[in-house]
Image (tube, one colour):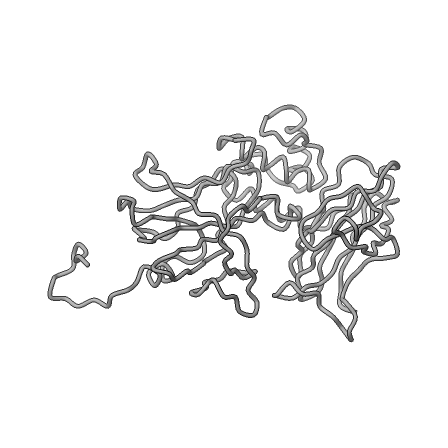
Length: 351
């Protein structure tokens, strides 16, 4: 091992493995990777060209040991530096998820490495064997490229292949739709419809027009989405537990159920409902850190009703509501939501 610049040969420094240095670097705020076969550039960045605010977790394989770390929040059209300086590793892996405001994460994970993560910020030194409060998720190996600034960079992208400007606008459009404003289609293309929806959003919140260019604008929008609204459906989680919710809409011809939406404790969420359905149904259940349904006196802690609709444990959307079991679904009791006043807030509370 060669001496680092500024270190005298006679000065003893404790030797640290790449995994140890990885775990001792920055707090969870960004993502960066360097391979042992790559040149020693200063940093590596992850850049988000998706229309979602994402949270990323990274994994590092080094000499048969694997560590993971997360979550690193990255807004659309922004980059975050992670693990400043050179990190030597055999393999670097990545998992990314959308924030809970978007419902079940739309980001596909096609990697074959199943590594442990936790729900909140975490550092896991031995990430192939999960402990209590940890779950396995799929990580994908990534190969960063050298950017114009000499650092390494890896991009998160959608099939739409947005550039930075389009990703930012599409991200704003998506949150406007969730907040109940008509900014569809979500395409990253500016126009009168998007501008009218954005102006109405700013006016309703008493915000100046120039806040749109603020680096904190996505936080402002997400806070708005998580505030009870006088229109549309709002879920509010008043429990100390994480709640997973599903929604169903009846357009008069068929009933579509979909989930899951993650609602963290003491927060609210507007599920995205397009069009003007004749009836809306809701189901929600509280889960623990191991994603197991919480039970009180041997009864699941959930909020639903008598309308039997199809759901499954993973992300789903289905218009078929018969023979649930034969199609790999389960029948779940949803409750009808009275939307006659134009808006409804459902509050999930401990009994």
